[in-house]
Length: 399
Image (cartoon, rainbow, N blue to C red; front, side, top):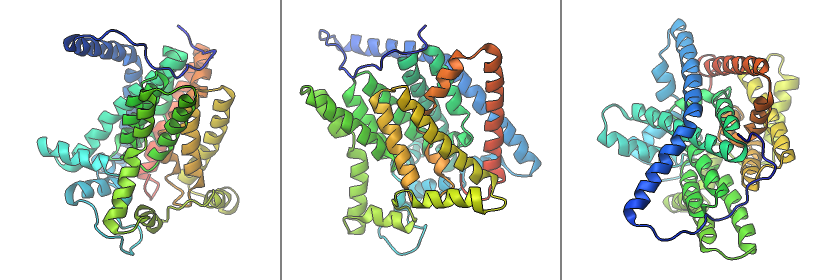
């Protein structure tokens, strides 16, 4: 089993084969999917174990505080916005009220909630939570696929473990879009690494319909596509490159038409105080938390440390010469998160899709002794449980 890679995989199209009959195509795809799922089974088992342990810890903590877990996970903060869109649709005007226009929230997740709720029992909040949980397993599978492709099965499993143990990882099982977005990102990057450009473009387009940071993935695929086309024209590369930004551009354009101005989406974001300021607000808040406030909230300290860790890990990713698509995506996402002038406290959550940042840690754990690995795994799970519980039960704001 290969645990380290000497060279990043080249972005080449899959080899051409003779034209198979339709039945054999379906059977072949089913067989490959089953084999891929079997390979990913240990990673999915580890992911399940971590998330269940964290959920039990949060449940016990919530019970002692007299609070219900379901409401915390399915019908709080942004979850209410998505369910509200599924129930009543989008606003049809810009307005002037701050933090009130639901056009800031991208449509794929609420549309899925509405469609699935129409054919299943239960409330739309329950459906939203179920979609997030299912999407988290799809995301974990995709993250394993990327890690396994680059560095082997052991690193793939550890990469999923670390992603499950993020201090704000409980969001993966809340009525939020992070799990759905990460699933689209992970499989889009995997498709790109294996030369499946059209799939990469389609999945990127879905990511662009899920979160505004889908533009980071579209930029990564676009630049990789331009570099590939310079070496010679391939229609698959061209199609994938053109498909990648369509979801994001489509929604932003639709919002502009709906409110009657070309910059409608960006005007909505201004009402939510989300503007690009080159990192001035980030630096101001970091200075306040670490140097001015005598007793900063623990959650804000955790967010700040997460941002510092992300920057350091990105440097390690560059040093390890990760494949260009991963570096471009995580670099663009990190630039958006750090360069935003919007609210500070959700920045750690915004970095949940940046799973390639965890690859240097996964590689280090793969080389560690069994004793060190046990200590690291145990401590990481405890940090994940405490961080998640503090986030939803002690911290007074949204994740």
